[in-house]
Amino acid sequence: MKIITSTTLMDKGLAAYGKPHPCPKYFSYGGWKFQNDKKFEIKNGTFEQSFARSCNTAFISQAGKLKDDDLSKEARDVFGIGLNWQTGVPTFDGSVPVQSAASKAASLIGQGGVRMNPLNMASVAATASTGTFRQPYLVSPSLDDRTLAKASRTMKSSTHDQLKKLMKLTATSGTAAEAMAGMSGDFGAKTGSAEVDNQEKPNGWFSAYRDDVAAAGVVPEGGHGGDTAGPIVAALLRAG
Image 1 (tube, rainbow, N blue to C red):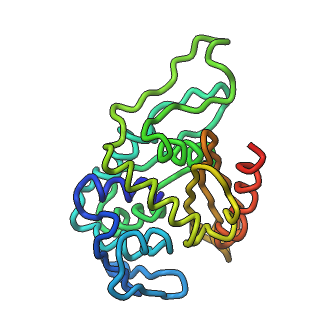
Image 2: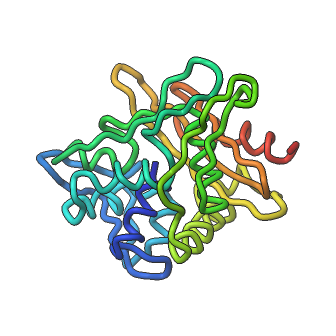
């Protein structure tokens, strides 16, 4: 989800590769106190460092500068999340609903009301790679004349250039580096950990691309995505 949040912030001029960006241990917004994994902080850090290390507070700290529907619009208009995906088999569509206060802040890191499945996140990785959303499907639309969803715009070129650098950095020296070690070609990745009520550990997520292949995976209660889902997704990319 931080991929979509990052493009939102960069489009709005609230973050940029190479620019200073706060990553405190804690940040409070809307009556909730948020923190980073193991309460780490990056003193005098930059946006790319926060992205590569998956700093929650770096994103949540910008919640007050965004309108309630900014993230939802970016997800729909650029990444196709929230559109009707007719994949050919019954699936649930991803959702980034309009939220406010603490729920809006939580959605910036993939919590709150955000709902995703691995196909959604593989598509997000593909859009990050190319800058253009192309709806994935499981059964060819030529068999039943289905109409595929289309996003209303492509990613801004400056945002796309920065996003690819962010994902490459994450894959080479950030939270995805171990899983993506030795990867060749044009590649990038992002890890994720989604907390779920009544679970001891969060679900581990990993989204990545290599050349013209994108993939994503989730390990329920897997903990850190780089340790659990990461090796699975990376193995698929190497095979592809």
